[in-house]
Image 1 (cartoon, rainbow over the protein chains, first blue to last red):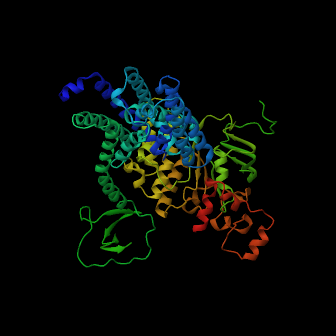
Image 2 (cartoon, chains in turn cyan, yellow):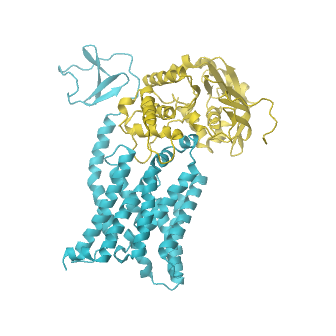
Image 3 (spheres, one colour):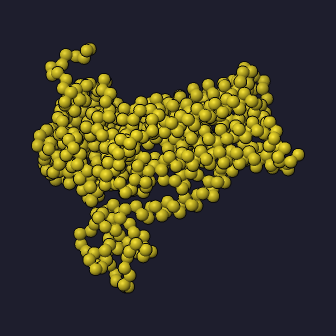
Length: 335
Length: 289
């Protein structure tokens, strides 16, 4: 069988479709979670969803739908506890982490299901995805992506500064709950692709990668969605091609690929941030006394003199061997 | 109307009217019997010592901190029924760290336009003009595309003012806009506020010291231990910190005076700091001075 034959197989095409939609939706909501410093919320919801999957398996209903219901309930609870608790919600998240996972394992065992069935949900099994599951994935992912992009101004404001948003008349609690519910939906959508235990990677890693190089929110959001598609599609293709020689799990490949892109981008981000920090204006007051800078040479500071020019009050300081030279008359002062 | 009988009729022309307002935080009284009326076009400075309740008062006026007693009207409407938030602009204390995802100056300022935007509608020409104008007023038009985190503290404060300004409100609440801002930026800030005042805006700001804002203020309200201690023409900074107005940890008078002035007043500031993050920020600042 050639690679072309492989991609012509119906299950492979279903997997490719699911990968594209998951790759779009997960980083879209992930951007808001990262903005609110709730990067681990996806993990919490993922663990809660394990219980949902177990309920679905034991009751012989669709694990996807029971996972959706339980994940949405769990996310709502996490959000309400976070809102009440005056904390960052990390303790609440921890409780859900362990409760959800333990509940799932317990219920699966009680129902006589084998652990291997549960495992397909824990680590993903995108190649066994059925047609109805592809349709559910497409619809839910589209809902998440459209709301994340369409309500971007409101969600941005609420995630950026809750108090300002409240005085602006926005229903902050409703938007917070919406973010939690959308996160729950994208977790269950990504469940079949990368698995519940790895789902948070697809929510967070593309965002972390994008923000290495971006400086506006909108670019971060769009770039993260692009990187998400790249990772999920690329990971799936790599896993499929590698499957001729070895047993490669697509879920793990997708996560590792997105991490690899992050590792490649990170040095660039370090360099950009270093350059940016060097240019932040000096905030201290301009000294009243004039201390002449050493005049070892006749160097004239200017636009292309090679010394970083940093705004300082009403003028520009040139950073020169750890000193700050400010033009004053025909010479430079130490600032 | 199910409101209790009200001796004064509601006045839609009055931006702020608070009568007998009280605020408790976790059961501890912070503000008591506060009366405050702000007329259209007023420039009011809420002053007072650290922990005197000035920040809590401005948060109560914006509805962020619920009143435990009293009655607050904004533009003649009680707070519960008030829905015209596009008439109010709020400039919170600058939070130290930015959010987890980069945001450009333009994006933060544009979020101030939300009070006037409908759901799922793109920005119109009018919105863009208001955002550009707001950036112009605070003097950051040339930095619009840059990330907020690349600005200095004073410039970030000006971004927050521009954000409130973008909604074109009539009434501004500013919580310590000059705190931790260097002098050149304080002058830039004063210049922005002067332009707002000329446009007829009503401004209520919390300040520990007025500095370059002093010439703009036409009324000072000095808080002391959760009550209004002075309400009248502006005072110089040193007068605000006069022992009569209860500078709790003033460096200018002796410990003996200090004790004789204050022993009858329960200290409300210290225990509160453990309970409420938002209202204790100015206590920290006092410590640094």
